[in-house]
Image (cartoon, rainbow over all chains, first blue to last red; front, top):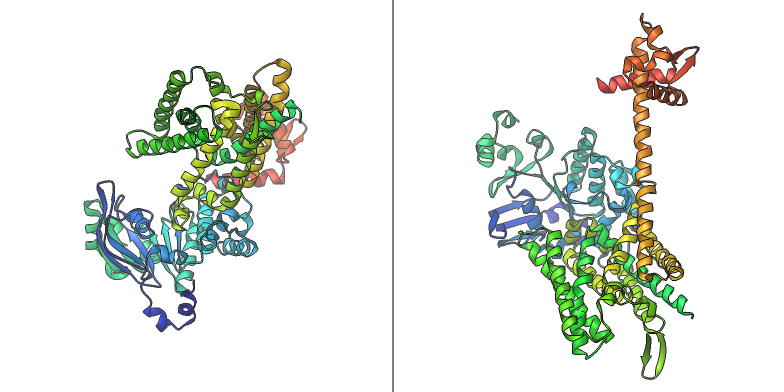
Length: 261
Length: 370
Protein backbone atom coordinates (compact mmCIF):
# COMPACT_ATOMS: atom_id res chain seq x y z
CA UNK A 1 0.00 0.00 0.00
CA UNK A 2 2.79 2.42 0.85
CA UNK A 3 4.63 1.98 -2.42
CA UNK A 4 1.43 2.25 -4.34
CA UNK A 5 0.20 5.78 -3.94
CA UNK A 6 3.21 7.55 -5.51
CA UNK A 7 2.97 5.34 -8.58
CA UNK A 8 -0.69 6.09 -8.96
CA UNK A 9 -0.46 9.81 -8.49
CA UNK A 10 2.38 10.24 -10.97
CA UNK A 11 2.20 10.54 -14.72
CA UNK A 12 1.65 7.77 -17.22
CA UNK A 13 5.31 7.88 -18.13
CA UNK A 14 6.21 6.83 -14.63
CA UNK A 15 3.49 4.19 -14.58
CA UNK A 16 4.86 2.76 -17.81
CA UNK A 17 8.15 2.13 -16.10
CA UNK A 18 6.43 -0.01 -13.53
CA UNK A 19 6.93 -3.76 -13.86
CA UNK A 20 4.29 -5.52 -15.99
CA UNK A 21 1.30 -7.08 -14.18
CA UNK A 22 2.29 -10.67 -14.97
CA UNK A 23 5.62 -12.10 -16.05
CA UNK A 24 5.96 -15.89 -16.19
CA UNK A 25 9.33 -17.51 -16.85
CA UNK A 26 9.62 -21.23 -17.65
CA UNK A 27 6.46 -21.78 -15.63
CA UNK A 28 5.71 -25.48 -15.20
CA UNK A 29 2.81 -26.76 -13.11
CA UNK A 30 1.85 -30.38 -12.43
CA UNK A 31 -0.94 -32.11 -10.57
CA UNK A 32 0.89 -35.00 -8.94
CA UNK A 33 3.21 -36.29 -11.63
CA UNK A 34 1.08 -35.12 -14.55
CA UNK A 35 2.23 -31.77 -15.95
CA UNK A 36 -0.55 -29.43 -17.05
CA UNK A 37 1.53 -26.41 -17.96
CA UNK A 38 4.87 -26.73 -19.65
CA UNK A 39 7.55 -24.11 -19.66
CA UNK A 40 5.33 -21.09 -20.19
CA UNK A 41 7.13 -17.82 -20.94
CA UNK A 42 4.79 -14.90 -21.11
CA UNK A 43 4.67 -11.20 -20.31
CA UNK A 44 1.32 -9.51 -19.99
CA UNK A 45 1.49 -5.74 -20.37
CA UNK A 46 -0.52 -3.25 -18.39
CA UNK A 47 -3.85 -1.73 -19.53
CA UNK A 48 -4.92 -4.75 -21.52
CA UNK A 49 -7.98 -6.98 -21.72
CA UNK A 50 -6.40 -10.39 -22.09
CA UNK A 51 -8.11 -13.57 -23.22
CA UNK A 52 -6.61 -16.92 -22.34
CA UNK A 53 -7.93 -19.33 -24.94
CA UNK A 54 -7.36 -23.02 -25.45
CA UNK A 55 -9.09 -26.40 -25.45
CA UNK A 56 -10.35 -28.13 -22.30
CA UNK A 57 -7.50 -29.26 -20.08
CA UNK A 58 -5.11 -26.80 -21.71
CA UNK A 59 -4.13 -25.35 -18.34
CA UNK A 60 -6.00 -22.02 -18.62
CA UNK A 61 -7.41 -22.10 -15.09
CA UNK A 62 -4.17 -23.60 -13.84
CA UNK A 63 -2.24 -20.64 -15.27
CA UNK A 64 -4.22 -18.04 -13.34
CA UNK A 65 -4.28 -20.19 -10.20
CA UNK A 66 -0.51 -20.65 -10.42
CA UNK A 67 -0.07 -16.90 -10.86
CA UNK A 68 -1.91 -16.39 -7.57
CA UNK A 69 0.01 -19.13 -5.79
CA UNK A 70 -3.09 -21.29 -5.44
CA UNK A 71 -1.40 -24.31 -7.00
CA UNK A 72 2.24 -25.22 -6.39
CA UNK A 73 4.71 -24.39 -9.14
CA UNK A 74 7.04 -27.23 -10.13
CA UNK A 75 9.56 -25.08 -11.97
CA UNK A 76 9.98 -21.51 -13.16
CA UNK A 77 8.59 -18.31 -11.67
CA UNK A 78 5.66 -15.94 -11.89
CA UNK A 79 6.09 -12.30 -10.97
CA UNK A 80 3.18 -10.01 -10.26
CA UNK A 81 4.04 -6.32 -10.72
CA UNK A 82 7.69 -7.31 -10.49
CA UNK A 83 7.38 -9.03 -7.12
CA UNK A 84 5.94 -12.11 -5.53
CA UNK A 85 2.19 -12.62 -5.53
CA UNK A 86 2.17 -12.60 -1.73
CA UNK A 87 3.72 -9.13 -1.60
CA UNK A 88 1.26 -7.73 -4.18
CA UNK A 89 -1.86 -9.59 -3.10
CA UNK A 90 -3.73 -6.37 -2.41
CA UNK A 91 -3.42 -5.31 -6.05
CA UNK A 92 -4.99 -8.48 -7.45
CA UNK A 93 -8.67 -9.47 -7.63
CA UNK A 94 -10.00 -12.90 -8.48
CA UNK A 95 -13.30 -14.07 -9.97
CA UNK A 96 -13.40 -17.88 -9.78
CA UNK A 97 -15.72 -20.01 -11.89
CA UNK A 98 -19.30 -19.51 -10.81
CA UNK A 99 -19.72 -23.24 -10.24
CA UNK A 100 -16.86 -23.37 -7.76
CA UNK A 101 -18.83 -22.01 -4.81
CA UNK A 102 -21.83 -23.15 -2.80
CA UNK A 103 -24.78 -20.96 -3.83
CA UNK A 104 -26.90 -22.46 -1.03
CA UNK A 105 -24.66 -20.72 1.50
CA UNK A 106 -26.78 -18.61 3.88
CA UNK A 107 -25.85 -15.17 2.61
CA UNK A 108 -27.15 -12.38 0.37
CA UNK A 109 -25.72 -10.53 -2.62
CA UNK A 110 -24.41 -7.55 -0.63
CA UNK A 111 -22.65 -9.83 1.83
CA UNK A 112 -20.89 -11.68 -0.99
CA UNK A 113 -19.67 -8.37 -2.43
CA UNK A 114 -18.53 -7.34 1.05
CA UNK A 115 -16.21 -10.37 1.01
CA UNK A 116 -14.23 -8.50 -1.64
CA UNK A 117 -13.13 -6.03 1.04
CA UNK A 118 -11.81 -8.75 3.38
CA UNK A 119 -8.40 -8.98 1.72
CA UNK A 120 -7.42 -5.38 2.45
CA UNK A 121 -8.71 -5.70 6.02
CA UNK A 122 -6.36 -8.60 6.74
CA UNK A 123 -6.83 -11.12 9.53
CA UNK A 124 -9.29 -10.48 12.36
CA UNK A 125 -10.29 -6.89 11.48
CA UNK A 126 -13.98 -6.70 10.65
CA UNK A 127 -15.65 -4.82 7.84
CA UNK A 128 -17.24 -1.57 9.03
CA UNK A 129 -19.36 1.15 7.50
CA UNK A 130 -16.82 2.23 4.84
CA UNK A 131 -16.57 -1.36 3.60
CA UNK A 132 -20.35 -1.81 3.46
CA UNK A 133 -20.70 1.46 1.54
CA UNK A 134 -17.99 0.41 -0.83
CA UNK A 135 -19.76 -2.93 -1.39
CA UNK A 136 -23.01 -1.08 -2.12
CA UNK A 137 -21.32 1.12 -4.69
CA UNK A 138 -19.80 -1.90 -6.41
CA UNK A 139 -23.15 -3.67 -6.47
CA UNK A 140 -24.61 -0.53 -8.00
CA UNK A 141 -21.88 -0.48 -10.66
CA UNK A 142 -23.04 -3.85 -11.97
CA UNK A 143 -26.69 -2.82 -11.81
CA UNK A 144 -27.59 -5.13 -8.94
CA UNK A 145 -28.56 -2.64 -6.21
CA UNK A 146 -32.13 -3.88 -6.17
CA UNK A 147 -30.94 -7.38 -5.29
CA UNK A 148 -28.67 -6.46 -2.35
CA UNK A 149 -30.66 -8.41 0.20
CA UNK A 150 -31.58 -11.31 -2.08
CA UNK A 151 -30.40 -14.78 -1.06
CA UNK A 152 -27.81 -15.75 -3.64
CA UNK A 153 -29.54 -18.99 -4.65
CA UNK A 154 -32.51 -16.93 -5.85
CA UNK A 155 -30.41 -15.00 -8.36
CA UNK A 156 -30.20 -16.03 -12.01
CA UNK A 157 -26.88 -17.21 -13.41
CA UNK A 158 -26.20 -13.82 -14.96
CA UNK A 159 -27.04 -12.02 -11.72
CA UNK A 160 -24.76 -14.34 -9.76
CA UNK A 161 -21.96 -13.57 -12.17
CA UNK A 162 -22.55 -9.83 -11.75
CA UNK A 163 -22.39 -10.23 -7.98
CA UNK A 164 -19.04 -11.97 -8.45
CA UNK A 165 -17.83 -9.07 -10.60
CA UNK A 166 -18.99 -6.56 -8.00
CA UNK A 167 -17.03 -8.51 -5.43
CA UNK A 168 -13.92 -8.26 -7.61
CA UNK A 169 -14.50 -4.49 -7.93
CA UNK A 170 -14.71 -4.31 -4.14
CA UNK A 171 -11.22 -5.81 -4.02
CA UNK A 172 -10.04 -2.51 -5.53
CA UNK A 173 -7.26 -4.07 -7.59
CA UNK A 174 -5.00 -3.19 -10.51
CA UNK A 175 -5.00 -6.70 -11.96
CA UNK A 176 -8.09 -8.88 -12.34
CA UNK A 177 -8.07 -12.63 -12.91
CA UNK A 178 -11.44 -13.90 -14.12
CA UNK A 179 -12.22 -17.54 -14.79
CA UNK A 180 -14.86 -17.74 -17.52
CA UNK A 181 -16.84 -14.63 -16.55
CA UNK A 182 -19.07 -15.05 -19.61
CA UNK A 183 -20.00 -18.69 -19.01
CA UNK A 184 -23.74 -19.23 -18.95
CA UNK A 185 -24.81 -15.58 -18.68
CA UNK A 186 -27.64 -13.81 -20.51
CA UNK A 187 -27.06 -11.23 -23.25
CA UNK A 188 -27.72 -8.26 -20.92
CA UNK A 189 -25.16 -9.47 -18.42
CA UNK A 190 -22.64 -10.19 -21.18
CA UNK A 191 -23.01 -6.60 -22.38
CA UNK A 192 -22.72 -5.28 -18.82
CA UNK A 193 -19.56 -7.31 -18.21
CA UNK A 194 -17.92 -6.12 -21.42
CA UNK A 195 -18.66 -2.49 -20.58
CA UNK A 196 -17.25 -3.00 -17.13
CA UNK A 197 -14.05 -4.58 -18.46
CA UNK A 198 -13.55 -1.69 -20.85
CA UNK A 199 -14.12 0.81 -18.04
CA UNK A 200 -11.49 -0.99 -15.97
CA UNK A 201 -9.03 -0.82 -18.84
CA UNK A 202 -9.71 2.88 -19.25
CA UNK A 203 -8.74 3.31 -15.59
CA UNK A 204 -5.40 1.66 -16.37
CA UNK A 205 -6.19 -1.79 -15.01
CA UNK A 206 -5.35 -5.13 -16.55
CA UNK A 207 -7.94 -7.89 -16.85
CA UNK A 208 -7.06 -11.49 -17.67
CA UNK A 209 -10.00 -13.74 -18.57
CA UNK A 210 -10.22 -17.44 -19.28
CA UNK A 211 -12.50 -17.37 -22.29
CA UNK A 212 -14.26 -20.02 -24.34
CA UNK A 213 -16.21 -18.31 -27.07
CA UNK A 214 -13.92 -17.79 -30.05
CA UNK A 215 -16.52 -15.81 -31.97
CA UNK A 216 -16.92 -13.05 -29.35
CA UNK A 217 -13.25 -12.92 -28.35
CA UNK A 218 -12.00 -10.52 -31.09
CA UNK A 219 -14.65 -8.00 -30.12
CA UNK A 220 -14.03 -8.14 -26.36
CA UNK A 221 -10.26 -8.50 -25.97
CA UNK A 222 -7.14 -6.75 -27.22
CA UNK A 223 -4.48 -9.20 -26.06
CA UNK A 224 -4.38 -12.94 -26.52
CA UNK A 225 -2.70 -15.88 -24.89
CA UNK A 226 -3.20 -19.23 -26.66
CA UNK A 227 -2.55 -22.20 -24.43
CA UNK A 228 -2.51 -25.91 -24.91
CA UNK A 229 -0.30 -27.28 -22.19
CA UNK A 230 2.42 -25.11 -23.71
CA UNK A 231 2.14 -21.49 -24.73
CA UNK A 232 1.22 -21.54 -28.42
CA UNK A 233 1.27 -17.81 -28.98
CA UNK A 234 0.74 -14.51 -27.18
CA UNK A 235 0.56 -10.88 -28.17
CA UNK A 236 -1.79 -8.22 -29.52
CA UNK A 237 -5.08 -9.84 -30.42
CA UNK A 238 -5.17 -9.06 -34.11
CA UNK A 239 -1.68 -10.38 -34.74
CA UNK A 240 -2.11 -13.49 -32.65
CA UNK A 241 -5.63 -14.62 -33.52
CA UNK A 242 -4.61 -16.30 -36.76
CA UNK A 243 -5.85 -19.41 -38.45
CA UNK A 244 -2.48 -21.05 -38.09
CA UNK A 245 -2.18 -20.31 -34.34
CA UNK A 246 -5.69 -21.58 -33.68
CA UNK A 247 -4.96 -24.75 -35.63
CA UNK A 248 -1.88 -25.30 -33.49
CA UNK A 249 -3.88 -24.63 -30.32
CA UNK A 250 -6.84 -26.84 -31.06
CA UNK A 251 -5.22 -29.37 -33.39
CA UNK A 252 -7.70 -30.95 -35.76
CA UNK A 253 -10.64 -30.23 -33.45
CA UNK A 254 -11.29 -26.75 -34.69
CA UNK A 255 -13.95 -26.35 -37.33
CA UNK A 256 -13.50 -23.90 -40.16
CA UNK A 257 -16.64 -22.04 -39.12
CA UNK A 258 -15.14 -20.92 -35.82
CA UNK A 259 -11.90 -19.71 -37.32
CA UNK A 260 -13.85 -17.41 -39.60
CA UNK A 261 -14.03 -14.90 -36.70
CA UNK B 1 -27.53 -24.72 42.67
CA UNK B 2 -29.76 -27.73 42.56
CA UNK B 3 -28.61 -30.89 40.87
CA UNK B 4 -31.31 -30.48 38.21
CA UNK B 5 -30.16 -26.95 37.38
CA UNK B 6 -26.55 -28.10 37.12
CA UNK B 7 -27.46 -30.92 34.74
CA UNK B 8 -29.60 -28.64 32.58
CA UNK B 9 -26.93 -25.95 32.54
CA UNK B 10 -24.28 -28.50 31.59
CA UNK B 11 -26.50 -29.72 28.78
CA UNK B 12 -27.20 -26.19 27.60
CA UNK B 13 -23.52 -25.25 27.65
CA UNK B 14 -22.41 -28.34 25.76
CA UNK B 15 -25.22 -27.96 23.23
CA UNK B 16 -24.28 -24.29 22.58
CA UNK B 17 -20.59 -25.02 22.23
CA UNK B 18 -21.30 -27.92 19.88
CA UNK B 19 -23.85 -26.02 17.78
CA UNK B 20 -21.48 -23.10 17.12
CA UNK B 21 -18.79 -25.23 15.49
CA UNK B 22 -21.41 -27.59 14.09
CA UNK B 23 -22.77 -24.83 11.86
CA UNK B 24 -19.47 -24.61 10.01
CA UNK B 25 -19.29 -28.40 9.68
CA UNK B 26 -22.78 -28.44 8.14
CA UNK B 27 -21.98 -25.55 5.79
CA UNK B 28 -18.77 -27.27 4.72
CA UNK B 29 -20.67 -30.51 4.12
CA UNK B 30 -18.46 -32.13 6.71
CA UNK B 31 -21.05 -33.54 9.10
CA UNK B 32 -19.39 -36.95 8.91
CA UNK B 33 -16.12 -35.49 10.15
CA UNK B 34 -17.59 -34.81 13.59
CA UNK B 35 -18.70 -38.43 13.66
CA UNK B 36 -15.18 -39.53 12.88
CA UNK B 37 -13.56 -37.26 15.44
CA UNK B 38 -15.95 -38.02 18.29
CA UNK B 39 -15.30 -41.74 17.88
CA UNK B 40 -11.65 -41.57 17.01
CA UNK B 41 -10.66 -39.61 20.13
CA UNK B 42 -11.34 -42.70 22.27
CA UNK B 43 -7.88 -44.32 21.96
CA UNK B 44 -6.25 -40.95 22.72
CA UNK B 45 -8.44 -40.53 25.79
CA UNK B 46 -7.57 -44.01 27.01
CA UNK B 47 -3.88 -43.48 26.35
CA UNK B 48 -4.01 -40.18 28.24
CA UNK B 49 -5.65 -41.87 31.23
CA UNK B 50 -3.11 -44.69 31.02
CA UNK B 51 -0.16 -42.31 31.14
CA UNK B 52 -1.73 -40.30 33.97
CA UNK B 53 -2.52 -43.50 35.92
CA UNK B 54 -6.25 -42.88 36.03
CA UNK B 55 -9.03 -40.68 34.66
CA UNK B 56 -7.39 -37.29 34.47
CA UNK B 57 -9.06 -34.37 32.72
CA UNK B 58 -6.00 -32.75 31.21
CA UNK B 59 -4.27 -35.97 30.19
CA UNK B 60 -7.54 -36.99 28.57
CA UNK B 61 -7.82 -33.70 26.68
CA UNK B 62 -4.25 -33.95 25.47
CA UNK B 63 -4.51 -37.55 24.33
CA UNK B 64 -7.86 -37.02 22.65
CA UNK B 65 -6.66 -33.93 20.81
CA UNK B 66 -3.65 -35.78 19.48
CA UNK B 67 -5.91 -38.63 18.36
CA UNK B 68 -8.23 -36.13 16.64
CA UNK B 69 -5.40 -34.50 14.72
CA UNK B 70 -4.17 -37.94 13.67
CA UNK B 71 -7.69 -38.79 12.49
CA UNK B 72 -8.02 -35.62 10.40
CA UNK B 73 -4.58 -36.16 8.89
CA UNK B 74 -5.33 -39.83 8.14
CA UNK B 75 -8.62 -38.92 6.43
CA UNK B 76 -6.92 -36.24 4.34
CA UNK B 77 -4.07 -38.60 3.51
CA UNK B 78 -6.46 -41.32 2.38
CA UNK B 79 -8.43 -38.80 0.34
CA UNK B 80 -5.30 -37.51 -1.34
CA UNK B 81 -4.51 -40.96 -2.67
CA UNK B 82 -7.64 -40.40 -4.79
CA UNK B 83 -8.45 -44.08 -4.32
CA UNK B 84 -11.23 -43.43 -1.79
CA UNK B 85 -13.84 -40.66 -1.64
CA UNK B 86 -13.95 -38.33 1.38
CA UNK B 87 -16.91 -39.99 3.06
CA UNK B 88 -15.36 -43.44 2.55
CA UNK B 89 -12.05 -42.24 3.95
CA UNK B 90 -13.87 -41.07 7.08
CA UNK B 91 -15.75 -44.36 7.24
CA UNK B 92 -12.46 -46.25 7.08
CA UNK B 93 -10.60 -44.27 9.71
CA UNK B 94 -13.04 -43.82 12.56
CA UNK B 95 -14.16 -47.41 13.18
CA UNK B 96 -10.51 -48.43 13.26
CA UNK B 97 -9.70 -45.74 15.85
CA UNK B 98 -12.82 -46.51 17.87
CA UNK B 99 -12.03 -50.24 17.82
CA UNK B 100 -8.51 -49.51 19.01
CA UNK B 101 -10.03 -47.46 21.84
CA UNK B 102 -12.43 -50.17 22.98
CA UNK B 103 -9.62 -52.72 22.79
CA UNK B 104 -7.43 -50.53 25.01
CA UNK B 105 -10.27 -50.01 27.50
CA UNK B 106 -10.97 -53.73 27.83
CA UNK B 107 -7.25 -54.48 28.12
CA UNK B 108 -6.17 -51.81 30.61
CA UNK B 109 -9.24 -50.29 32.18
CA UNK B 110 -11.52 -53.23 32.74
CA UNK B 111 -12.06 -52.09 36.32
CA UNK B 112 -11.92 -48.34 35.96
CA UNK B 113 -14.79 -45.92 35.61
CA UNK B 114 -14.60 -45.85 31.81
CA UNK B 115 -17.07 -48.40 30.62
CA UNK B 116 -18.70 -48.61 27.21
CA UNK B 117 -21.92 -47.06 28.52
CA UNK B 118 -20.05 -43.94 29.58
CA UNK B 119 -18.28 -43.86 26.22
CA UNK B 120 -21.51 -44.04 24.28
CA UNK B 121 -23.89 -42.05 26.45
CA UNK B 122 -21.69 -40.08 28.83
CA UNK B 123 -22.70 -39.43 32.40
CA UNK B 124 -24.40 -36.08 32.53
CA UNK B 125 -26.53 -37.52 35.37
CA UNK B 126 -23.49 -37.18 37.64
CA UNK B 127 -22.66 -33.62 36.54
CA UNK B 128 -23.57 -32.25 39.97
CA UNK B 129 -21.52 -34.83 41.91
CA UNK B 130 -18.21 -34.55 39.99
CA UNK B 131 -16.56 -31.61 41.71
CA UNK B 132 -13.44 -29.70 40.72
CA UNK B 133 -10.90 -29.06 43.46
CA UNK B 134 -8.01 -26.63 43.46
CA UNK B 135 -5.96 -28.01 46.33
CA UNK B 136 -8.63 -28.18 49.01
CA UNK B 137 -10.77 -25.46 47.50
CA UNK B 138 -14.05 -26.74 46.12
CA UNK B 139 -14.72 -24.93 42.85
CA UNK B 140 -18.05 -26.60 42.17
CA UNK B 141 -19.12 -29.03 39.47
CA UNK B 142 -16.29 -29.87 37.11
CA UNK B 143 -18.64 -30.31 34.14
CA UNK B 144 -19.75 -26.66 34.36
CA UNK B 145 -16.14 -25.51 34.25
CA UNK B 146 -15.26 -27.72 31.32
CA UNK B 147 -18.36 -26.94 29.25
CA UNK B 148 -18.19 -23.26 30.14
CA UNK B 149 -14.60 -23.20 28.93
CA UNK B 150 -15.63 -24.91 25.68
CA UNK B 151 -18.38 -22.39 25.05
CA UNK B 152 -16.06 -19.44 25.66
CA UNK B 153 -13.41 -20.99 23.43
CA UNK B 154 -15.81 -21.68 20.56
CA UNK B 155 -17.46 -18.28 20.83
CA UNK B 156 -14.07 -16.58 20.78
CA UNK B 157 -12.97 -18.70 17.83
CA UNK B 158 -16.01 -17.87 15.74
CA UNK B 159 -16.19 -14.20 16.73
CA UNK B 160 -12.50 -13.48 16.12
CA UNK B 161 -12.28 -15.43 12.84
CA UNK B 162 -15.87 -14.89 11.65
CA UNK B 163 -15.09 -13.30 8.31
CA UNK B 164 -12.17 -15.66 7.65
CA UNK B 165 -14.31 -18.74 8.35
CA UNK B 166 -17.11 -17.31 6.25
CA UNK B 167 -15.07 -16.60 3.14
CA UNK B 168 -13.03 -19.82 3.43
CA UNK B 169 -16.25 -21.82 3.70
CA UNK B 170 -18.09 -20.04 0.90
CA UNK B 171 -15.23 -19.59 -1.53
CA UNK B 172 -11.94 -21.28 -0.56
CA UNK B 173 -10.30 -20.08 -3.79
CA UNK B 174 -10.92 -16.42 -2.99
CA UNK B 175 -9.90 -16.94 0.63
CA UNK B 176 -6.60 -18.44 -0.47
CA UNK B 177 -6.03 -15.66 -3.01
CA UNK B 178 -6.59 -13.09 -0.26
CA UNK B 179 -4.11 -14.82 2.02
CA UNK B 180 -6.60 -16.41 4.42
CA UNK B 181 -5.20 -19.93 4.17
CA UNK B 182 -8.17 -22.32 3.92
CA UNK B 183 -5.90 -25.18 4.99
CA UNK B 184 -4.88 -23.40 8.18
CA UNK B 185 -8.52 -22.49 8.91
CA UNK B 186 -9.57 -26.08 8.23
CA UNK B 187 -7.10 -27.43 10.76
CA UNK B 188 -8.01 -24.75 13.31
CA UNK B 189 -11.67 -25.67 12.93
CA UNK B 190 -10.82 -29.35 13.27
CA UNK B 191 -8.80 -28.63 16.42
CA UNK B 192 -11.72 -26.72 17.94
CA UNK B 193 -14.14 -29.49 16.92
CA UNK B 194 -11.84 -32.05 18.53
CA UNK B 195 -11.52 -30.21 21.82
CA UNK B 196 -15.30 -29.70 21.86
CA UNK B 197 -15.81 -33.37 21.12
CA UNK B 198 -13.61 -34.37 24.05
CA UNK B 199 -15.50 -32.12 26.43
CA UNK B 200 -18.91 -33.05 25.11
CA UNK B 201 -17.89 -36.69 25.13
CA UNK B 202 -17.55 -36.74 28.90
CA UNK B 203 -20.98 -35.18 29.30
CA UNK B 204 -23.13 -36.83 26.66
CA UNK B 205 -20.92 -39.54 25.14
CA UNK B 206 -19.58 -40.13 21.67
CA UNK B 207 -22.74 -40.79 19.71
CA UNK B 208 -24.66 -37.85 21.12
CA UNK B 209 -21.80 -35.38 20.71
CA UNK B 210 -22.16 -35.82 16.97
CA UNK B 211 -25.87 -35.22 17.18
CA UNK B 212 -25.50 -32.02 19.21
CA UNK B 213 -22.96 -30.67 16.72
CA UNK B 214 -24.89 -31.48 13.59
CA UNK B 215 -28.62 -31.71 14.27
CA UNK B 216 -29.37 -28.21 15.67
CA UNK B 217 -27.05 -26.68 13.05
CA UNK B 218 -28.75 -28.57 10.23
CA UNK B 219 -32.17 -27.48 11.50
CA UNK B 220 -31.05 -23.83 11.74
CA UNK B 221 -29.61 -24.00 8.21
CA UNK B 222 -33.09 -24.82 6.92
CA UNK B 223 -34.71 -21.92 8.73
CA UNK B 224 -32.71 -18.88 7.65
CA UNK B 225 -30.68 -17.37 4.83
CA UNK B 226 -28.20 -15.51 7.02
CA UNK B 227 -25.04 -16.97 8.51
CA UNK B 228 -25.22 -15.07 11.82
CA UNK B 229 -28.87 -16.09 12.26
CA UNK B 230 -27.95 -19.69 11.47
CA UNK B 231 -25.45 -19.63 14.34
CA UNK B 232 -27.91 -18.01 16.76
CA UNK B 233 -30.75 -20.35 15.86
CA UNK B 234 -28.53 -23.41 16.14
CA UNK B 235 -27.54 -22.40 19.68
CA UNK B 236 -31.19 -21.70 20.58
CA UNK B 237 -32.35 -25.07 19.25
CA UNK B 238 -29.49 -26.82 21.06
CA UNK B 239 -30.23 -25.15 24.39
CA UNK B 240 -33.95 -25.77 24.05
CA UNK B 241 -33.30 -29.42 23.26
CA UNK B 242 -31.08 -29.76 26.33
CA UNK B 243 -33.61 -28.23 28.71
CA UNK B 244 -36.63 -29.96 27.21
CA UNK B 245 -34.74 -33.25 27.04
CA UNK B 246 -34.04 -33.07 30.74
CA UNK B 247 -37.67 -32.29 31.46
CA UNK B 248 -38.79 -35.32 29.50
CA UNK B 249 -36.15 -37.79 30.71
CA UNK B 250 -36.47 -37.28 34.46
CA UNK B 251 -40.16 -38.13 34.95
CA UNK B 252 -39.75 -41.11 32.59
CA UNK B 253 -36.52 -42.20 34.31
CA UNK B 254 -34.89 -42.37 30.86
CA UNK B 255 -31.41 -41.45 29.59
CA UNK B 256 -31.06 -37.67 29.89
CA UNK B 257 -28.55 -37.35 27.07
CA UNK B 258 -30.68 -39.58 24.88
CA UNK B 259 -33.76 -37.44 25.52
CA UNK B 260 -31.84 -34.23 24.76
CA UNK B 261 -30.78 -35.49 21.38
CA UNK B 262 -34.18 -36.97 20.60
CA UNK B 263 -35.70 -33.53 21.15
CA UNK B 264 -33.15 -31.94 18.81
CA UNK B 265 -33.97 -34.60 16.22
CA UNK B 266 -37.63 -33.69 16.61
CA UNK B 267 -36.75 -30.02 16.11
CA UNK B 268 -34.91 -30.95 12.93
CA UNK B 269 -37.92 -32.90 11.65
CA UNK B 270 -40.11 -29.84 12.30
CA UNK B 271 -37.65 -27.67 10.38
CA UNK B 272 -37.63 -30.07 7.45
CA UNK B 273 -41.41 -30.05 7.33
CA UNK B 274 -42.29 -26.47 8.14
CA UNK B 275 -39.34 -24.22 7.22
CA UNK B 276 -40.80 -21.22 5.39
CA UNK B 277 -38.22 -21.29 2.61
CA UNK B 278 -36.90 -24.86 2.38
CA UNK B 279 -39.62 -26.87 4.15
CA UNK B 280 -41.52 -29.75 2.59
CA UNK B 281 -44.86 -28.08 3.30
CA UNK B 282 -43.83 -24.69 1.98
CA UNK B 283 -42.44 -26.33 -1.12
CA UNK B 284 -45.63 -28.32 -1.69
CA UNK B 285 -47.71 -25.16 -1.31
CA UNK B 286 -45.46 -23.30 -3.73
CA UNK B 287 -45.58 -26.14 -6.24
CA UNK B 288 -49.38 -26.30 -6.04
CA UNK B 289 -49.63 -22.56 -6.52
CA UNK B 290 -47.35 -22.72 -9.55
CA UNK B 291 -49.38 -25.56 -11.02
CA UNK B 292 -52.62 -23.68 -10.53
CA UNK B 293 -51.19 -20.50 -11.98
CA UNK B 294 -50.01 -22.45 -14.99
CA UNK B 295 -53.37 -24.19 -15.37
CA UNK B 296 -55.23 -20.87 -15.10
CA UNK B 297 -52.95 -19.46 -17.77
CA UNK B 298 -53.73 -22.45 -19.99
CA UNK B 299 -57.44 -21.82 -19.39
CA UNK B 300 -57.06 -18.18 -20.41
CA UNK B 301 -55.25 -19.18 -23.60
CA UNK B 302 -57.95 -21.75 -24.30
CA UNK B 303 -60.73 -19.20 -23.91
CA UNK B 304 -58.88 -16.65 -26.03
CA UNK B 305 -58.37 -19.21 -28.77
CA UNK B 306 -62.06 -19.91 -29.02
CA UNK B 307 -63.26 -16.35 -28.64
CA UNK B 308 -65.61 -15.41 -31.42
CA UNK B 309 -65.49 -18.85 -33.02
CA UNK B 310 -68.40 -21.16 -33.64
CA UNK B 311 -67.46 -23.39 -30.72
CA UNK B 312 -67.07 -20.51 -28.27
CA UNK B 313 -70.44 -21.24 -26.77
CA UNK B 314 -69.63 -24.88 -25.88
CA UNK B 315 -65.92 -24.47 -25.11
CA UNK B 316 -66.49 -21.76 -22.54
CA UNK B 317 -69.51 -23.41 -20.94
CA UNK B 318 -68.71 -24.16 -17.33
CA UNK B 319 -70.24 -27.63 -17.58
CA UNK B 320 -67.90 -28.63 -20.42
CA UNK B 321 -64.84 -26.71 -19.30
CA UNK B 322 -62.54 -29.66 -18.66
CA UNK B 323 -63.45 -31.60 -21.78
CA UNK B 324 -61.48 -29.72 -24.41
CA UNK B 325 -58.46 -29.51 -22.11
CA UNK B 326 -58.82 -33.12 -20.90
CA UNK B 327 -59.05 -32.05 -17.27
CA UNK B 328 -61.02 -34.02 -14.75
CA UNK B 329 -64.19 -32.21 -13.63
CA UNK B 330 -62.67 -31.73 -10.15
CA UNK B 331 -59.49 -30.16 -11.53
CA UNK B 332 -61.49 -28.01 -13.95
CA UNK B 333 -63.50 -26.71 -11.04
CA UNK B 334 -60.42 -25.93 -8.96
CA UNK B 335 -58.75 -24.13 -11.86
CA UNK B 336 -61.93 -22.19 -12.53
CA UNK B 337 -62.13 -21.03 -8.91
CA UNK B 338 -58.47 -20.10 -8.94
CA UNK B 339 -58.81 -18.20 -12.23
CA UNK B 340 -61.82 -16.26 -10.97
CA UNK B 341 -60.00 -15.33 -7.78
CA UNK B 342 -56.95 -14.26 -9.76
CA UNK B 343 -59.21 -12.09 -11.90
CA UNK B 344 -58.41 -13.87 -15.18
CA UNK B 345 -62.03 -14.79 -15.92
CA UNK B 346 -65.54 -13.85 -14.91
CA UNK B 347 -68.63 -15.96 -14.67
CA UNK B 348 -71.43 -14.83 -16.90
CA UNK B 349 -74.45 -17.11 -16.51
CA UNK B 350 -73.30 -20.63 -17.51
CA UNK B 351 -70.18 -19.41 -19.30
CA UNK B 352 -66.70 -18.14 -18.47
CA UNK B 353 -65.60 -14.88 -20.02
CA UNK B 354 -62.03 -13.57 -20.18
CA UNK B 355 -61.37 -10.33 -18.33
CA UNK B 356 -59.01 -7.66 -19.63
CA UNK B 357 -56.36 -9.06 -17.28
CA UNK B 358 -57.00 -12.61 -18.43
CA UNK B 359 -56.56 -11.56 -22.05
CA UNK B 360 -53.22 -9.92 -21.17
CA UNK B 361 -52.07 -13.05 -19.39
CA UNK B 362 -53.07 -15.25 -22.33
CA UNK B 363 -51.36 -13.00 -24.87
CA UNK B 364 -48.20 -12.85 -22.82
CA UNK B 365 -48.19 -16.64 -22.41
CA UNK B 366 -48.56 -17.04 -26.17
CA UNK B 367 -45.71 -14.63 -26.76
CA UNK B 368 -43.50 -16.60 -24.42
CA UNK B 369 -44.31 -19.79 -26.25
CA UNK B 370 -43.63 -18.27 -29.65
